[in-house]
Figure (cartoon, rainbow, N blue to C red):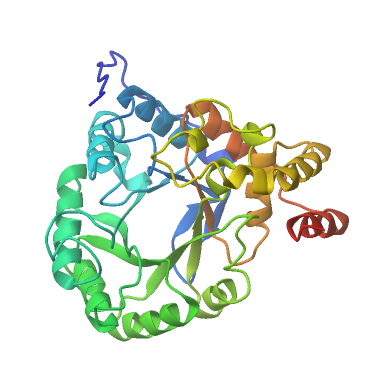
Amino acid sequence: MNINDKSNPKPYVPNPERYNTMQYNRCGNSGVLLPKISLGLWHNFGFYDSFENARNILKKAFDLGITHLDLANNYGPPYGSAEENFGRILHKDFKAHRDELFIASKAGFDMWPGPYGNHGSKKYLVASLDQSLQRMGLDYVDVFYHHRPDADTPLEETMHALDLLVKQGKALYVGLSRYSPQETIEAQKILKSLGTPCLIHQSKYSMLDRSVEPELLPTLLDEKIGSIVFSPLAQGLLTDKYLKGIPEGSRASKDNTYLQAEEIPKTIEMIQKLNEVAQNRGQKLSQMAIAWILTQPAITTVLVGASSPKQLEENLLATNNTTFSNDEITLINSILKGA
């Protein structure tokens, strides 16, 4: 457990210009505005990471106008530690700014032993959010997601659980993550009948994984549901980090990662070509990859992670140029198709 929790003698004072530079999008059919770039706390916020670095990333995010922070019950490692650390940082630095933040948590994956610590039952979801609120020191979250569909639990039970949590005042809105187009339609029908419509859907999306484009994104537009996407940089593949192979200490070189080393050689030629396009646009590859996602009408916000305040600042520059010429779009599509 590495928590370098040194007291800062000076209280945190946010950048007074933070709302003048960030661009915000309306989330589905709601009154909620979300920043084009949101911060995910999946990595770099657990007990094995530097507490002070996590704290500095969050302060930089808020200074840049990033108001939406995305967590889940089992983010860490270990499970729950990202929420616990976030709660400590919230108390130290953001207590006076809680109402300026849009905080998300999720449940649906493995969290605690036994039959009630996973999946989509009402028992699991209600207990999970209670635990998350306790870890973060919050009375409510702004949005609570079911993290993945559960074929073994009736959809009605899962949606009734989400509705119950809103009616209990523990969440203001509900969301779905990783639901297919048809599952999303069915879930939204139930939620609307209960008076708690789905606010937002979270899915994986990047230049290298476009599976959501044909059906899911049009479905979200039709259902008037906002969209937040994760892994926009394909776990770091769409950065300049792997242009020449796998550097020591990178995510692909570690065992506890979703980015496997064998994926690098398969895509390196494509990544190098995309990098040339980005350079011609005056962007880093990571910035172009984020900008490209933001051209989709269905996308409300792009969820990025950050290992440092500087990295977060660099990714945010993607919003400075989200316009692509027809020639650029044609070239990018041909590269992604392997032409």
